[in-house]
Structures are given as C-alpha cells and as structure tokens.
Amino acid sequence: GRVRATRSQGQGTRPHRHHPPSVTLSTPHPFHPLTASPPHRLSPHLLPPPSSPFTLLQDDSKGPPRPSVWRDTPLLTLGASFFFVAFFIVGQQIQPPLLLERSSFGLEEDSETRTQERIALTSGLVAIPTSLVTAFVMTVGYLSLSKRGVRDETCVLVGGLVASITFFVVPMCKTVWQLCVINAVQGAGCGMFMGAVQAMPSK
Image (tube, rainbow, N blue to C red):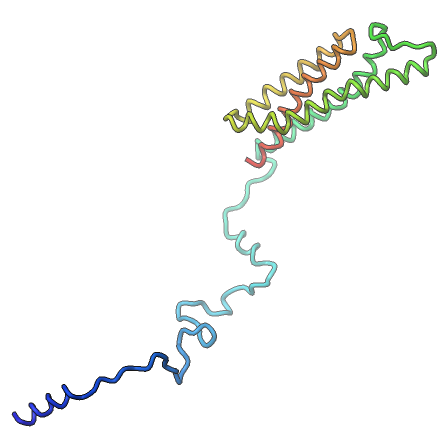
C-alpha cells in the first residue's frame, strides 16, 4: 500500500511536458501531394494524358449518338426560309428600276441616257428607308419585343406577312414618296423577320 501511494504521489508531482509548437517529421507524410498520392486515386496508366488532343473526343464518344442533320426539322425549316429570302432580296433589287420607268414618277429627260441616270439615282435613294428601318427593327425593335415576352415564331409570322404584302403593294405606287413609305414598312417587316430567324438557332 505504501508503494502504490508513493507511486501515485510521484505521478502527481511529475511535471507535464508539452510538445513543441512545430514538429519535424523524419518520414514523409503519406498523403503529401509531392511525395505520394492518396489511395483512392487511379493509376496514371489508366488515365489519358492531359495534353492529348483526343481527350474530348473520347468523352463525347461515350454519350448517345447524335441525330442526323437531315432529320432535324427546325434546322431544315430555317434553311428553307433563307432560300426564299434570297428570292425576295433579288426581287427587291430588280423591282424599283423597272417601276421608276413609268411616266407617273416624272423621271423622264430629253435623252435616254439622262433618264436612266436619274432612274438609277432615284432607285438608290428609295432604298435608304428600307435599309435604315430594317437595321433599326432588327436590333432595337426585335430586342424590345423579345424582352416583353413576344415569341420568335410570332415575330417571324408577322414580319414575313408584312414584307410579303408590301412586295405586292409596291407596283401600285404612283409617286416617289409613296414608294419610300412602302419601302419603310417593308423594311420593318424584314427587320422583324430576320432578327427572329437569326436568334432562333441559339435558343
């Protein structure tokens, strides 16, 4: 009993030793990033090299096969729309010079050469409203309609109808100012149509 009491008293009086704040390890830490890799990591020979140009191709090949382009109905519809837009643009360029040859526009001169020069100048001037209104509606007008919740399909339908109707109204014009007004309305329809058609593939 005396021995146990002595030992307990000695342990109670023994000073407690604290570890120093920094301990230097004689052996490398098993999970140090420069010495060893964690056990859950895969072996390097099972992974493709990081600089390999075929890494993305290998990842894409694991997914489902992509559908054929010739079976994509929205893409084919957009392609057909641009095909008919090309016909519209060609007709829009040919129509004013032929229309301005009428005597009701008052562009006749003494010689045929001067008459053709005046018709060519007037054809360029009446095309300005179409270009300006088309650029404005395609950017500002279409963006404002899109922010208000108007669907692209509605813009394509309304713009296409307006541009088509004005194309048949142009031959009914008798003066230059009437032709400028109709061309401005036609430019609004073309701008709404082209703005929506160009934005639809990205959505």
